[in-house]
Amino acid sequence: MSAEGPRLTVAMASDTGHLRQNNEDAMAIDAALGLIVLADGMGGHNAGEVASNLAVSAVCTALAAGHPDHADHPDRPVQLDHADPPPDQRLVAAIQRAHGAIHALAQTGPAYTGMGTTLVAALFSARQVCVAHVGDSRLYRFRDGSLTALTRDHSLLEEMVAHGQYAREQARQLVKKNLLTRALGVEPAVEVDVQVLDTAAGDLYLACSDGLTDMIDDPAISACLQRGQHRPLQDLADALVQAALIAGGRDNVSVVVARLGKAKPWYQRLLEQL
Image (cartoon, rainbow, N blue to C red; front, side, top):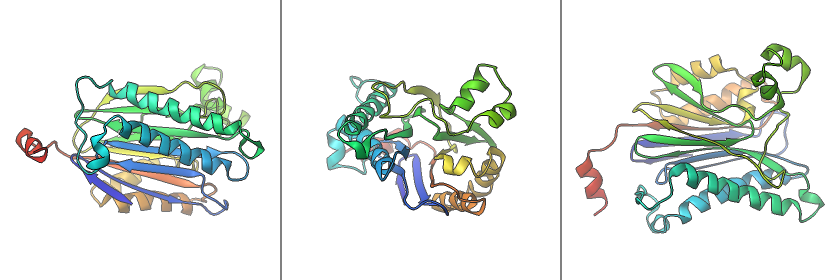
């Protein structure tokens, strides 16, 4: 599925994988809000699927609710008022609301006990992107042929490496990569990592679940983006998912790709609002 708004073109793709029976990943794109969001759920039965879908829908609803005219004109780019909270505060507040909803549902019965989800989101404005995440779903930026990971996994492995206790290869032999230290809905409170970064025309952004990064490494992801950077975004999203499936497809794999174009002239933006 793809969507297009001023400056931002977005597409997404997902597959259950070769071993799983259901898809616990969830995604959403809103080109008018400048939003991409992806979640990877966990929990018994269908609880992981419930958690990820609840997280994504809660974030989208909270951000859209801050702009009442968005419901009437979903294809029109949202214009931020000076009285609006900064994008990073709005995005974190939306994620915290999602966390509260998941945690509350998890207390309602055994079917939802222990459920939770990762989440990564990017909220684009005129010249910046606000990036927020919890867990090990990632956001990458591909700029001028170079791939940069904009998020760091909230996992035991990454904590061991960050604290200088072990080299990455040593840590991989001691702990499983997917032992998370943070997730939405699991504990009463959660800390959301957030950052605001400058953007540039031509940037490619990739949000993905660990079903991609467990199957292909960063150099392979970079090569795929290099080959597909000028192709239709839906083709690129599909190619990334196929690469993970060819490499084994042991988990659900989901990706959202976004491309930034050149800003429209001020008079054209003005005419679009009349």
